[in-house]
Amino acid sequence: MPRGARIILDNSCYHIIARGNQKQDVFFDVYDHEKYLQLLKKYKNKYRFKLYGYCLMSNHIHMIMDPREPSELSKAAHGISLSYSIWFNAKYGKVGHLWQDRFKSMVIQKDEYLIGCINYIEANPVRAKIVNNPLHYPWSSYKERIVGTENGLLDLPNFL
Image 1 (cartoon, rainbow, N blue to C red):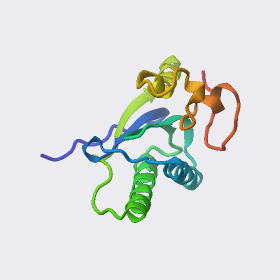
Image 2 (image 1 turned 90 degrees about the horizontal axis):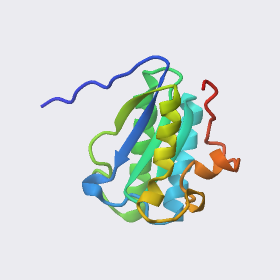
Image 3 (image 1 turned 90 degrees about the vertical axis):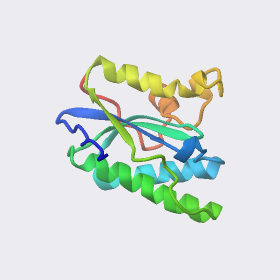
C-alpha cells in the first residue's frame, strides 16, 4: 500500500519524529548525540529552517522545524537522518536501516499550541524518568530556551 503524501502548508511548522528501527537505540554515548546535533546544525545552515525545539531520546528524536520553503522540509529531515545513519553504521559496524520507516511530521500552527508542543517534547526525559527536571537533560533545547545557554541551534518564535 503506498504511503500518503505529507501535508505541507505555508506559514506552519512541523513536529518531526523519527524512531529507531524496531524501537532500537540510535544513541549510545555522548559522541552519538553530539554527532546528531552537529548534523542538525549543518542541515539547518544548508536549508535555513528555524528550529524551535528538539529532544534526542535513546531510541527516537523530536524536532519542531519551520522550513523557509515547505518543500525543503523533507530534504532537510531526510538529509539529517541519512547522514546520521551512514555515520552510525560505520561507527558500529552495522548495515541496513537505522530508522523505522520515514520520519513522521505533524503540522503545527504558529500559535499557543506551538509552545505547548515545545514543552511536551522537552519534557520527554522527565516522563521517561531519566531526569526529574528537564534542565538536567543535556540533549534537548530546554536549557537553551529557558536559561539562554546557546549552542547555535535554537530559534525563538517571534510570532506569538
